[in-house]
Amino acid sequence: MATERATLLPAGHSKPIGRYSPGMAVTFSAGSRLIFVTGQIATDGAGNVVCEGDPAGQTRVVFERIEAILSEAGADLSDLVSLTIYLSDLANFDAVSRIRNEIVGSPAPSSTLLEVSALAEKGCLVEISGVAAK
Image (cartoon, rainbow, N blue to C red; front, side, top):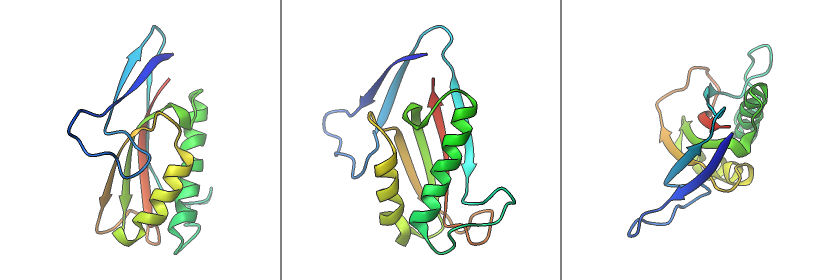
């Protein structure tokens, strides 16, 4: 199991604007592991985009998908240590950030957010990948 997670915020750095940590140190014990979650988008089991036009709804679906993957490895969202969030339009930042802030625990994972010109599936507004330590 990951025995300890510590938020890293050096003196002189600005305070995060959301629920994320500028850095995270993870101390491992025997049997611990990292779990890598590839970029998840808001699709159903048949691959159809859901919550079209709703960045908050898509973000919730994406975190549900991430949670399901982590569960397969015996982990959950509280084990996340890093997130990378891709937005097709930075105008959706507030909606996506609000949902992320509701869902992620403490200590909050490190997080990077990027605007990209397009995501792999038309109609997807957000894609999130992550790393968990368990």
